[in-house]
Length: 145
Image 1 (cartoon, helix red, strand yellow):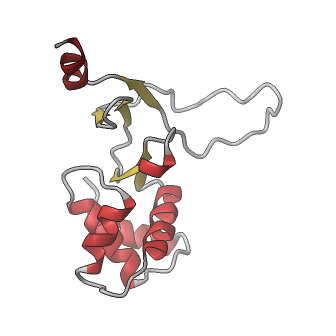
Image 2 (cartoon, one colour; image 1 turned 30 degrees about the vertical axis):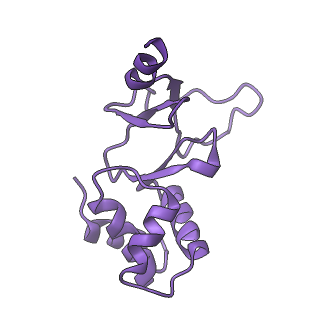
């Protein structure tokens, strides 16, 4: 697994500013055992930086998502999106449409080289996200009870 320092070094090499707040957002995600909402991240970052705004946390989450180190989960409903550190462990997620729970799918089944779209043969893929939507076993069980 990639370390916080390796992520910071890579971000710096790619021209990103390493603000203390950005570093803390990344640290919070790396040390979390579960995906977090932006508000969850904000609450945790505020322990170190009491005056950090939710907007600053959102901007940093989006930049870290664009960098590929963080994934945004529940793309269908951005209001309840969750964020998770991926590092170099690229994977996808299943999302329960009833309760919103998310589950990691431990591998990526998308080929490394994707075909270009028919309309733009020079399209350059830089990343991808796949989510599978359904009903978790707890919601299915409570519905059938």
